[in-house]
Image 1: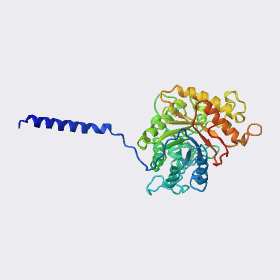
Image 2: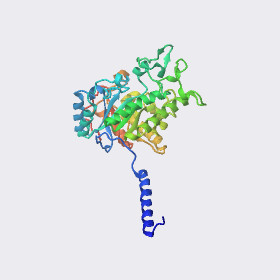
Image 3: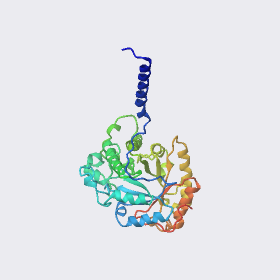
Image 4: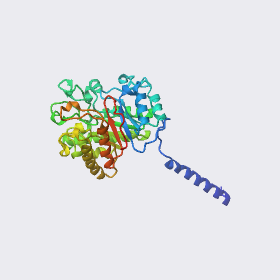
Length: 377
């Protein structure tokens, strides 16, 4: 049938509309999971650490009040702890984490709603490769010393960063936390055991797809850790969360930390936030400071200058948000430590601020934080 001019024009218009409709999906924002909870990223994250036990008990209300009454605005809450426990019972009875779920946090969503009410930014801490529970349940995913799962001097076992099954196990927990409403996932213990280079030849373990190739064992460890971080960030993209990683402060002072597989720059390139643990008590005489615990301002200042230089070399540097010390390191022995209180905590914060770093987190394993601190000195 021959089309009349009006019909042809109409058909052409219809085709144009159809073409435009075809192109619309390209313009639609990608799907991002919505938990229903709303949290705004603060002007600068100033947070404190909260254990699973504290988050699920009366201590939480006390900590919420403390944050609400001060210039703090965030909490880092254990979702998978240092032993490998998930700190809540999954709602789905078929969840692969049901057996490791503890009822420390009875109702995680209610807990997050309390934080939402007070505009407290929630960060889920997921301990990755230090995992005694998983190591013993799946020895093939761990390191074996003879016929037994290897453990360090503190009786802790690690799972193997070369194993993709271990990656997925931890990313799955992170996704559950994101679905609950956490706005950031912080991965801790993203590394091999300390001193691994001294014991690697005595242990039995699988190197997976890293087995072959021309890289040295050191390079393979660094690659595996870096690859995990990049993989986790990619898997978490649909959930709209920030991704952060805790890293030893000294890792920034070296080209890479060979035994544990941490390369500061490579990890930093794959995260939104890098959180170096720079507790003064944890350093030896770096930066020419003989007793760092006694010099919190000087130690943090020197670290901040070094880190800034290192991050400036990256194309897309992450936000720097170091972990600071709010505990007393009496184990260092007389003359090597001091009681940490208002003055010492403020000194660390000021050293960061003086070097252009506005974000930080406070660590106290027992969640007993110094009162009366000026958090924006």
